[in-house]
Image (tube, rainbow, N blue to C red; front, side, top):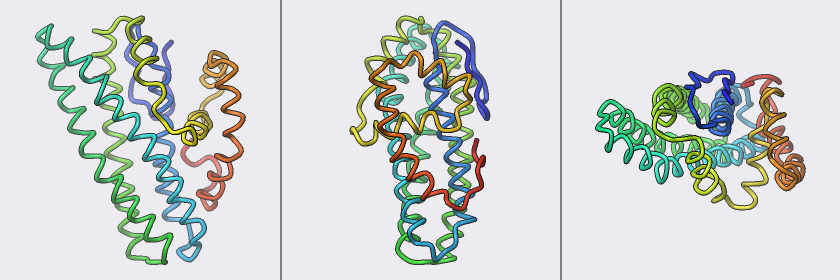
Length: 238
């Protein structure tokens, strides 16, 4: 299955089904666009909205950290072993870049958390300006990393990892690991603004348990979404 979602840089062909990887990337891009807009449009004195934005940012950061951690722990070592065996130096340089780009993103996540935390406590135009700059950089840097991964790292995966092996890795290494509360929000987070031609087949394949978790999680996620992005026009980030 080849999935090309809005904003996605590429979908290299090959035996591995990367649909869920691309769905997560779509969610990260969507969120960052919404956060950038929210920081500009939310009145400084609406502390309840800033508190909701802080909570929503922390959810985004946990999901991103979980995704990156699993790549660092499982995906890059898997690919590294294969490209080293093949003597593929160009691919090894791509994997080096993936790891260094991950390391550069983490400090930005902390800086944005600090900005939202400050605005949740007290209005400050100066803090908002710094937060807006940090978010714009996070959007641009993470967007560049995701595009680099989609164009080059995924091409390496498709070249070296058979479809069955990737399915086993995804099932055993990439699923799970989140707290139950975060899992309840992950599923509605994933399908938020996802095109129907992508979300429909994924939900059909998900099974009864995951569809039940989605139904349970949607109301709480929807309340947080409305509270955090109360001043962001509908459709922004889609």
